[in-house]
Structure formats: structure tokens, C-alpha cells
Length: 187
Image 1 (cartoon, one colour):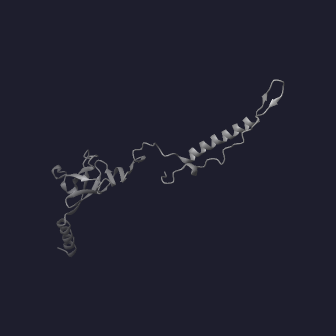
Image 2 (cartoon, one colour):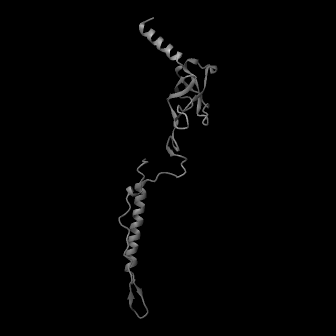
Image 3 (cartoon, helix red, strand yellow):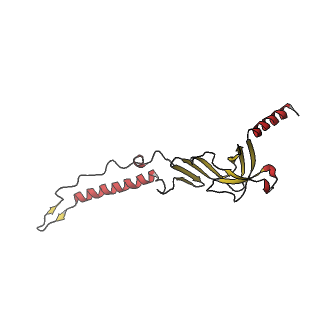
């Protein structure tokens, strides 16, 4: 046995003796348990022998409800590790969802959607579009105010009269996108 092979063998023995093992394989289709946040993996070396399947591989390596959870696609290639007998996902070739939870905040990312917490507040406004709509409303109000102040009434006897107290208010300055944007969350 070559010196390199002896070194590799010694390191592999040390890993196994300390309960640390890294395995590559395939996520078993339909094995996702979203509530338990686990999957089943068929190791590459198992040669399709389902009796060698590794069950209950954790998708979240952090305890106490905080952390990042990666959800691999059915049939994706995965790398898992066993540390002291607990299997945990390290890598996946294809993800269908990622979720980050930190205390009371949760971010869920899927193809085409980024959701904060339960998504109950709807989408994040597109500040340039909203500011443009508000500015048009402000301009229309100001134009209407000018027309109101300039109008006259015919009074019996033939005289005209403008409002005795013209409205001098206007909306200024106009709303800008920076007035309504949330700088903590950008998209």
C-alpha cells in the first residue's frame, strides 16, 4: 500500500472511530417529511439496494427552531454527514425551497417567490410605481384647487363672486419613492 493510500486509510479510520461519516447518494423520491424536516437517502454505494437506505436525514443542522433548512428536489444528488449517529444534509444538487428562521422571523424562498414570515401583509410595494401614482394624485388635487379658487358664481342682480376665502393650500413637496420605501427589505 502506498504512503498516500495509508494516509487516506488512516484518516478514514479516524473519521469512523469518531463517529463522523460523509456519504453521497440520491434523495429518495417522495421521502420528504416537511413537518419533521427529514428526507431518506439511498447511498451511491448501495447499488439500488433499498434495504441500505438512510432514513430520517435532517434538513436543519441547528436545534431550537432557528437556522437554515434546504429542501432538495426528489431524486437530487445529495451529500450527508453523520456526526455521532445523527444524519444531516450538507449539500444538494437541486433545491426546491430554502427557509431561514431566526427567532420570530422567517424567510422562505422558492422559484419565483420570496416570502417573509407568513406572507400575510401581501407583496412589497414597487416604490417607484407607487410614488408615481401618488404624485399624479397630488398634481390632480393641486390643479383642482386652482380651478376651485378661480371659479365664480352668478348672483341674482348680475354680479359675479369668487370664493371669499380662497384655499391657499397645496400639496408640496410631491411624494418621492424614498418617502415610502422600506430600506430594510429591498427587491
